[in-house]
Length: 56
Length: 526
Image (cartoon, rainbow over all chains, first blue to last red):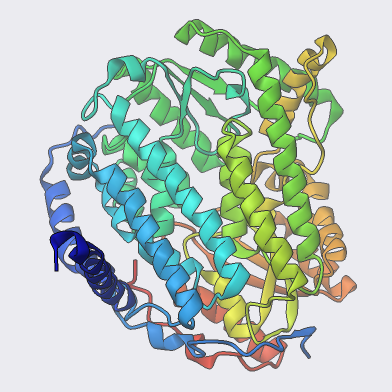
């Protein structure tokens, strides 16, 4: 099969894989689990290190 | 017992308690049947694309590592899960249409704030075209300045951040109290002040306008924020002093003159001129927004309410107060929402297996922070038809450009400012706070009132007995629910829900529709 003929199949496969991966992330809330347990603590640690000009 | 019973079988998850655990986020997302789950999944992708468009810019990445409040925006999809819990069909689509747009609006506000911010984006040309505007105020006096950007920097730093993460204000409250600010004022303006003391606001703009908002905390906070703006950053700040007794005829001229002075101040600081053509275009959109809100409330007064809860309130806040007719895109969103509301009403779509009580939500409300109103529908079948903050103007303002209307416009802008959300019912006297509540109960066929009692707010304190006595006379079930707005250390989420649970069990002698969500382990959740 020529490359041109394979293109729709490849697009379909790519789309299906994208859907499968993102739907699993969506349904099992993996995005929020990752951000709350891995990203947020790093950001909070960083904010505590920044010198600030606090006054009233 | 029920006034409406859902004859359609509920598709997907029936017991929503399964979604919760002790964690910061939910165990998994809800199964809503194939059609609605795929719809929700599609909107989740759309939401991620909005966030990606913000964070892809290097200046915003820099800001994410500089500003503490920025971290709360990790929780945007989690917030949507709260607001859409248990929803199917049209109500699910209404919430997504409204809230996804609110997210987009706040994302734009963040992007604009960072663009002009002296520490990160530092686009001086852009910053010189910006006017900082008090978050807790109508943006009516900006309707005639199409070339200026009105930046409500407290919205992303405090107000929206608190919708996303209930703990977002705690650091700033601690900072404010560390500097001697009393802890018994409203945590919302106190946290805003904490952001200023902590040097965590983006710094931009040619000038700023603050409004004497509704409480002691707000007045105190604004004074100190203005001091830093003027003395450290050289941003002159105008104090717009809207009268509290807004229903009185003798304050109207004073209020209109103050609007004139605010406009003159902005002209002087920015060099821009007031544009009457643009003002009246905006006024037409303000009127359209009013007509739409009144139409939604009319549908909510029938047995099949559609656009309700915290989303109704939040969308109205954004559209009525933050937008105030300035952006045509809101009209498109209104149209989409109207389509779903009309379909939902025709199809008799319901959000729960049955509706037992029709409730008006009154008082200083925290429903943005906790997903209480949606929970009331699913747990107890109590439908929150509308809330105090959504009951703003129902009359229209002058929209044709004539010499008489140009003078009238100042009065209209002043009237809008005095009737901003919160102010129009918590200030203005007995009639707007107490009498109007019973009028709304009658109009909307409500048999229940949930009174939020904000521990740090003194606005409703003196009226406690009046509300109870008059509700008893009218045969309306009145439930008081205490909270402390942005400070969950005073009233955690379950302590708030427990007050409602107790009332429903002991006074109303009812059993929950979904007992799995009567007690939720979400005190530590975002």
